[in-house]
Every structure is written in C-alpha cells, then in structure tokens.
Amino acid sequence: MPFRPPALLLTCALALTACSSPTPTVESAETPAAQTPAATAEGVQWSEWAHLDVAASPVAAHGDRVVLHDHDAQTLSVHDSTGAEVFALPSVRLTGTYEPAVRGDDEHLYVQLDEPGLPIVAVDWEDGAEVWRFEPAAVDACAPPEAFEMRLGNEAGGGPANDVLLLTADHGADASLYPDDCWGESNADMPSVPVAIGVDTATGRQAWEPVTDVIGTSLTAANGVTNEYVYQVIRSSYQPTLNRIEVATGAVDAVAFDGLTAAYDPSTYESPVHLSDMGGDMFYLSTEAAEPEFLTVDAWTDGAQLIADPLPHDVPCEAFVRRSAVGFAYCVQSPDMSFDGQYWAGAVASPDGEDLTGGSAATGSRRDLWTAAGPAGLDEGWGYELDGYLGNDPVSPGSDGRGAIALPGADAVLTAHRLDDGEELWSYDGADSVISTTYVPGLDEYVALADDRLVALAADTGEEVWTEETADEALFAAPGVIALVSNASGTTRLRMAVS
Image (cartoon, rainbow, N blue to C red; front, side, top):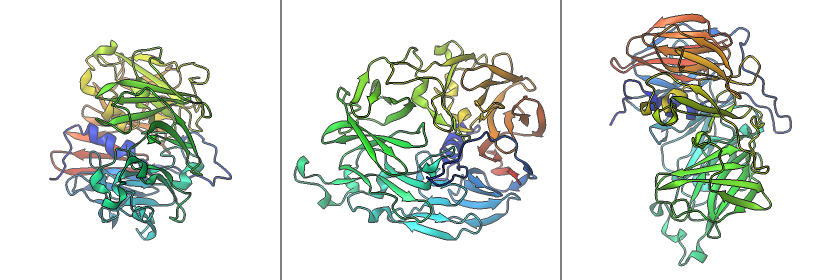
C-alpha cells in the first residue's frame, strides 16, 4: 500500500532525515581531520525553488545532488538543484518506518538493494555509475543479510571511521532466515556467525575480519558518541556481553555482566530493546517489557556492571542520545506534563568525541543536564523525545563552536540555547508558533516552519533572513536541503544550498 505521511509528517521526518544524513568529507585514518564549525561557507547560496509533481523528501545530499524518496511509489531518485532527475536508483531496501537503506558521503552514495542477498552498491553521485558491489551473503551462509543494518562508521561529524561502512546485526535471530544446516544439534554445536562486518568504502572489500558470535542475538547502540567505536550487547558463551568494536580496525573489547532481567537477556528478548551509548562508558537499555537498566564500564579490562539508579535526575534524557549533522551528540527530553513544562537537555560529546559535561563511569560522576521552559500547552502529543521536531536536526555549531539548539520556547516562539550549558543565545517571536526547525550548514541559517510561512533566521542572531509563504505543507530536511511537501496536493517544493 502506498505510504502517505500524515499532515505534519513529523514521525516520517525523523525516519527520513535524522537516520539518513550524509556525512562531511573525512581524511584517511593516518591523518584524521579536525572538526570545525560549519559556519557560512564562501560562495554558498540558496538555489531557486524547484517544483516537483510528487510528494518526496530528501534522504541524502552532496553538492548540487539530492536523493529524494517518493512517498507514494516508494522509489528513490537523484535530482539536481533545479529539481530535474539525474538518475533513478534501483529498488532499495526499506526498513523500520519506510526508511530507505541509503547512506552518503562526499565520495559515494551507498545503497542496499532490495533483491536476493541484499547486496550493497556504491554509486557515483554524478551519474549513478556503480563503483563497487559487496555481497553480505558471501561472508557467511549462516549470517542472513536480512539480520543486518547498514550504517556509516560515523553517521555524522569528521573522523577516520567513515572509511568503513558497517553492517551490524541489530536484533534477535529469526530462525526462518537461517538454512537448516546452520542449527546445531545442541547449544554447544551452534556455529559462530558475523554480528558486525566492516566494508572499505573506497574499494568495497572487507575492511577487517568479521566480529562473530554464536547464532543467537545481538543489539547495536542506535548512536555512537565518539567517532571510534560501535557497541553491541550480545550473548557470548551464553552470558550477556557488551562488545566495543573499533570501527577502523574491527578490534573488539568485550566485558561480560550479570543481573539483567529476562527482557534484556540477549537469549530471550521478549520485545524490542533500545541500547543507547550515553558517553563516558555509560549505556542505557530500555524496553516496554521491563524497567530501564543502566550499564557502566569502569575499565574494559575489568568488566561491566549494572547500576540500578545511576542518574541524579528522573528524566532519562540520555536514553535518547542523538547525533547532529554537525557532529554533536546530545539529548533533549520533551517538556510534557510530567516534567512541569521543562525541557531537560544536554550535550553529550563534541564532534571530536570529547565528553562535554564530565559524565564518567570510571569516576562515578554523572552528566549534568540543563533545563529550559517549553511553550504553554506542549504536552505528550509532541512525543517523549520530540521525535518529529528533532528529526529535522535543529543543532548548529554555534558562533563559539560549542553547539547551539533552537527549541520552541516559553516566552518566544523559538529560543536558541547553547548546547552544553543551556545559556539563552537569542529568541524569535515573529510568528504564532513553530512546528519544525532545521539547521542549514554552509549558509549558517535556521529554517523554521511557522503557522503559514517558512522563516530563515541567522543562526548567530536569530534575525530574519528571508521568508516563504506556505499552505498545509510539512518541512523535510537533509543537511543543505529543505523540502516543503503538500500532503493535500501530493507535490513538493525543493531548495538547496549550493556553491
């Protein structure tokens, strides 16, 4: 059945932008690039508005190329800044809430095809030519490709990890996916299969020997805080184990732990489980079937332990760590009625992976969050973590490089706060309400969808730069691209920041 987002398209905005953001240029592992604020770039300007006769949202972009996802046909194609189609992508695997398995960097566009074996291809941004092809099924017959999710080593920010494309097993094993001869007669006979595979983004060859575990289950953290590691909870030798995998080399540190309830034991997952890397070697596990659990690692040589109540506050903001397109790891908790109208927010790490707020399992210190008043009437309808609003990524580097976030405010329609300490930087009150906000690198602007118009604001001052009238349209974004999608007419207006 064709998928048509609801009127505000908020949940879909999260699925199609936050999870599919392209990544900036990176250098080799020998010479990692220093991260600098993505302020105004010389020669960058907005393109003219392009009009498309389909409802489509941007997935990834590079230069004057953008991947658009057609909501009705569920197809993807690459367009230029005039809206003209440059080439169509082959049928792409869709995961979760219709999220296409597409990633992009300054070198290639990486696509997992919806065909037998779910091969991954790198294509040229200019003409769609296939650069290389990787067949996950060829790695191990007992590691079904359907069990893997594709992600860049570092989804946002600079660093050598983007030299590696990752395939990580993110959920419990579905017995029907495995050939019959993969199952042993006893638990002791179960074969070891890959739970993490690294692919060299330049050549399409395996970057390192796969990380393996016995057939069973694994769970990968949704977002890594640093550029260096990805984390998994697996059941190794029939004991819950936390793996730290170095993205560039595949090297693994593993620590076993006891005490998880059955809902979190990787051998008996009862419902979907979320693993969040909270930074400072702290991790958060949550599921609908049990109370949240916290893991800490004092030292990777000594093991992990469960902490019943490690946070000095009742709002588990750090359960929902996000990575912005400009590289900051952060969390924001919705000011719904249970939080007395307050946001709880914090910066977890800077683009280079440095912990900004001192949280550390080794020292027993916990990250300090800041609070700010939200708008009157903002309640549970916004979602526990402002899903749709944060999906368009309202985080900028800030004029001082410490990060800034634009949130609907109590005394103004939009208020910008410094990301690490919550200091108010500016406020904007030129509309009745703001539905969605995104930061545009290169132009150093926030673009906010207000009641009946789109407003561009200077990121350092909050002053209006330009406006555009809207009518029953929703804002979708990828770094450097905005799209206004009309659910009523099934059309799209597209604009890009181009050189």
